[in-house]
Length: 249
Image (tube, rainbow, N blue to C red; front, side, top):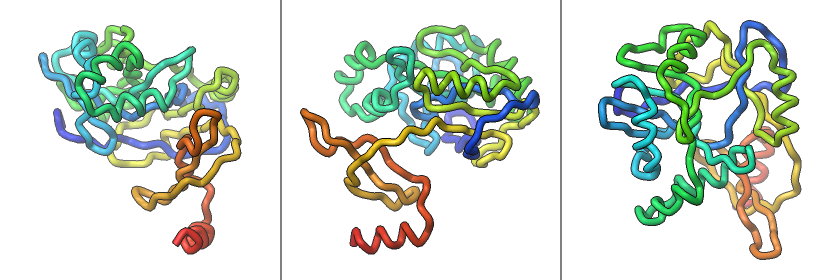
């Protein structure tokens, strides 16, 4: 498991927030899912699709010192925080820089924080433990800093947290059953995401078919036309998708 790509446990989408003492509710961070592997002085980072992105994030050297155990695998969201919000475009920018010199500069202009929300391994396989126990181990594993912190969370009070994320302009919330075990490569009904939706009028710039159908949409600004702002993957009936592809062809 160590230093090999892992397909993490995924969330199921739900439309409405709820309260339930069996769940812990956390903010939904807006970045890339990153799994951090550490053993001794070696630390590497993998995306949820298995890509090794260690070279793109020099901050991992500081992360190595902040993980207090010799060996660990942590499930995180890599984010760039600006004005109290995680900005997806900023992290996307960091993840796409190919040049080593520009990466070094971006550490100052677009600093990265890894928000940790689960521990899979700390010398022992912890995936079979309930989430409540894994959260306790995670807290003991990390020395919080600017580069890595455990995520915040509240028990039972999902509706109020959802309203808070709406007021703060955050992406939404995540609800996880406290007794849930960590099952890799699974979209679990025990882990739920509730998103904050905002509506804007966009221009369709293109589309993609893999890993799933999506429309590439953009906006026009005074200084740039047709700037890509999102990929729309939800809300299409099969017949609507086929009708669009027929027109696009």
